[in-house]
Length: 64
Image (cartoon, rainbow, N blue to C red; front, side, top):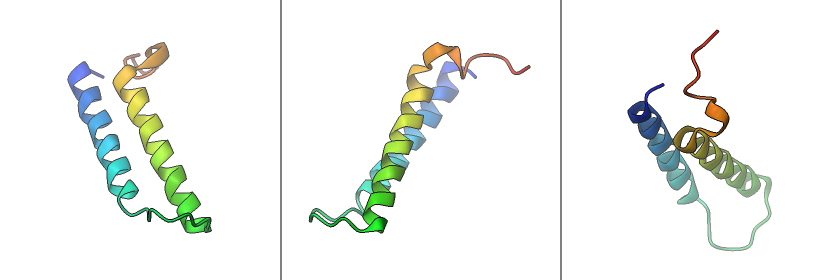
């Protein structure tokens, strides 16, 4: 995957994380819905980091 494509996909994952983060309420509630949203935000940020930083050359490697 080219660098430009990786930047685009990473930016999309950051936008997904930001969109879901805006649905979180600032109060301290520990319902399962809030925990699930936090998990999705963390997962989206992790995927953005993988695409943007490309550790261990996972994304740039050619398929088998």
